[in-house]
Image 1 (spheres, rainbow, N blue to C red):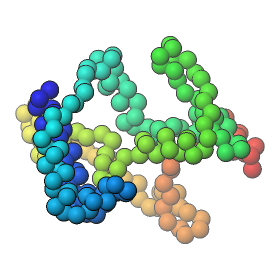
Image 2 (cartoon, helix red, strand yellow):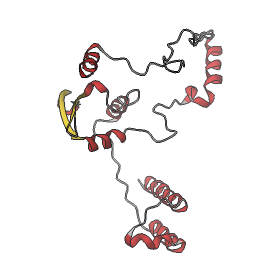
Image 3 (cartoon, rainbow, N blue to C red):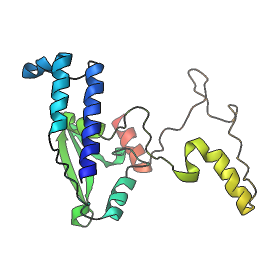
Image 4 (spheres, rainbow, N blue to C red):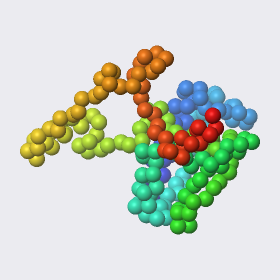
Length: 197
């Protein structure tokens, strides 16, 4: 824990310094004095003199549980359309699985603002990707590493199928550009769309 304490303190104070330099640190009321460079440096010094307490413990279900939980978010959005049951009078009702009680399906209703707040918590910051590959599949060295793996395993390279040309792709009736499938709807979803139009 002493190492984690120092690392966390260092990262936290570095973040504070960066935000202060970029003038993105919100300092209202009694904290306005920290806008002065000398006062801010004294404040940082006081943070380094304190003994920080970092609370970390093993996850309740163990590493396998954490991996299972995170795996649900790697390829999917936070909530798919078919789970939304109703949206009326500024409230959103949606189905969710209660994993604590044998994965029972339940319905939760939230104010639209709260629903959006929770949904936006699942969006990644810019330049972050959901899945990162390490080792021989890391982006920076993937081509060279896979070539070496094929050579060591005496396996021929699999030819990559050619991408569809614009002649075979669907064309937009408005601008003539190629169209991309964004989502495929199930029959029940199509019925809802057709009923509402």
